[in-house]
Length: 226
Image 1 (tube, rainbow, N blue to C red):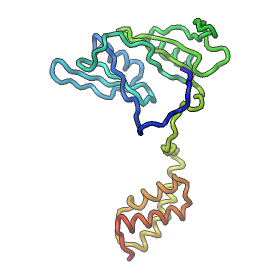
Image 2 (tube, helix red, strand yellow; image 1 turned 45 degrees about the vertical axis):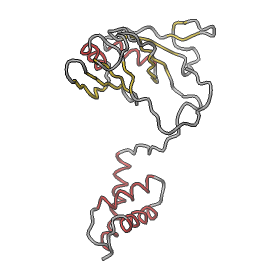
Image 3 (cartoon, rainbow, N blue to C red; image 1 turned 135 degrees about the vertical axis):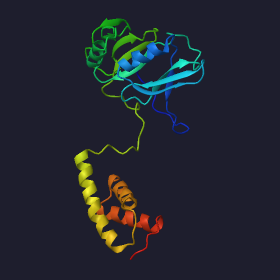
Image 4 (cartoon, one colour; image 1 turned 90 degrees about the vertical axis):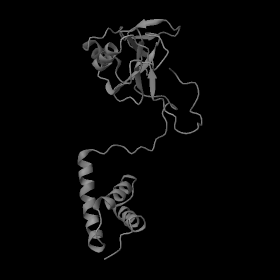
């Protein structure tokens, strides 16, 4: 869907974590979603009247629950649950290969009528395909290649480091730690490595990072000089 306003101030982190679906046959639904390649996070049963199965779509931060005694929703009552995909054609092809009955790709004209095929301008948020689970709960694939302004939260998450870069960084850390090791009492090497690596990943120079690690060992770990 298109945004209408920018992000507003909130009360802190509040992330949508799980959506509960009504299903008639838990094992059948579980097998269906696992066949889609969704991760099985949990399958917990307590007595005859409670069971919760949690599954998560690939790369999604939000999961689904199916089971017994977890929701008053009737089987098949959920509709237009949206799955964002980068390539609508590739996503549809993958589902079809898994034996899922998926609609043809479609987009909407300016009068909101449904038109067959991908959006001719290739716009994000404009191309769709749909499918249902065995109970009739409806899913909608929506192609999103570039999110519109205001559609992503600011994050302080550190970007992933590739293996080669990480190896070089560990080698560098070893070198600077060697000097500290020669001048200070016995300690756990990982206690010094952690603040050094953290400082480097935040953009500090090797010397600045070594100084940060030294301070940590002095102020937190209380490691005395030799």
